[in-house]
Amino acid sequence: MVKAVLLDIEGTIAPLSFVKEIMFPYSKRKLCEFLEENWDKPVIQEIIRDASREVGKELNLEEAVETFSRWIDEDRKITPLKELQGYIWEEGFKSGELRAPLYEDAYKKIKEWNEKGVPVYIYSSGSVKAQELFFSHTEYGNILNLFSGFFDTKIGSKKEKESYLRIAEKIGLNPEEILFVSDNPDELRVARKAGFKVLQSVREDVQPSEEFKKIYSFEEIEL
Image (cartoon, rainbow, N blue to C red; front, side, top):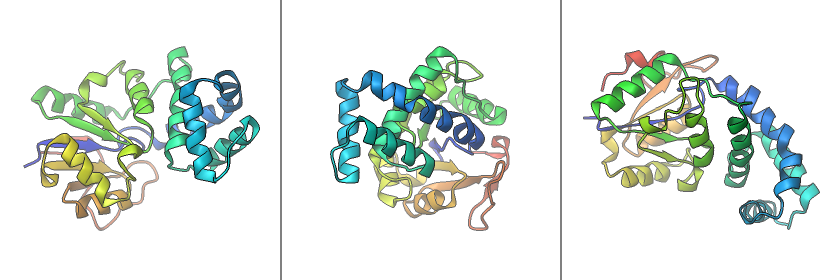
């Protein structure tokens, strides 16, 4: 019996195009200005130290801009980049330049689960800070109250079985009591190995996988 739902964001409950075509370019466009204005802040310096460890050398401002810009182009799923993007996106969401779109069927189903007392969690490569910003500035308003928790790469890679076991432990349920929905077969594969129930969300240009049961709308999900 499913007692909780764990959801991916991009390509699952929100258009992948918004992240790729709006959020990523926004963070790259604002990157240099943001680092120049916030370089000496302790939280930003901690991110720079993490990035420096990643590349194996201490980064100055110019090198940091070049490194993060390259990582954005490469869509690197690493914590210092995701943390920094979270702070840049915060300015965009709070100014109104960014507003998160959600698939209507996903929003309605998440709301329904919330009303029925089924806890819903998010697991995304984007930082928890970015996730909270995303869901507090959606087309449906602030919907943070619909979620019971958020997980990012600090708990581990989305393509490692151990990450899902840690999430189950944090949630306080057995893996087989959690349904994970994602568009990414690699994520679904390791989640299933961890014992999770899984569904592939097929949206936009997502290639259906024969390995998994598929949904084309959240209306199809019955717990």
